[in-house]
Image 1 (cartoon, one colour):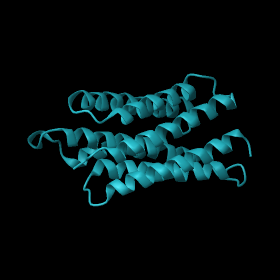
Image 2 (cartoon, one colour; image 1 turned 180 degrees about the vertical axis):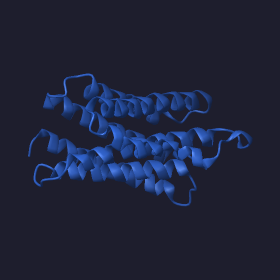
Image 3 (tube, rainbow, N blue to C red; image 1 turned 120 degrees about the vertical axis):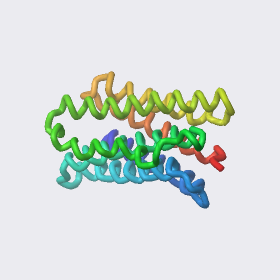
Length: 199
């Protein structure tokens, strides 16, 4: 097993820990935001397991690409739902608009073979989710408090984003560092969700 396999195992364990916290928070709660975040964690666990086994079985990287895109789209929908939850009852947009990012799945087959465009889609959704999460959590922290762990988690996600997209991707150490930051961000954000009262 090489370094990237160990970091995939780290992501699996950190996602399982975070999923435990989020599922514990889900009991008796009717929150689309937490539910979508939980789905994203499950998809991440599946993605990490398949990427871990990819070196041992002859799996197709197309499946990993679809899973990765699904994770980003579900996270974007989760953030849309979070914005919807923050609005007063009279100004909330309809719930079906929360799932608007999932329409990308319909058009992705058209650009999937073009690496530049597909990478641009991934960068846009990743970077956009990090920026929106930082802005939302910072605004809530300013108004009511209780969002420090989510802000720290979002900042760590931005370090993972920089390591993965800005630094040299051919270097395994930088890919491994991005995965370590990702797993740390997952645990911290999951703990922040567990500590926050969503009633």
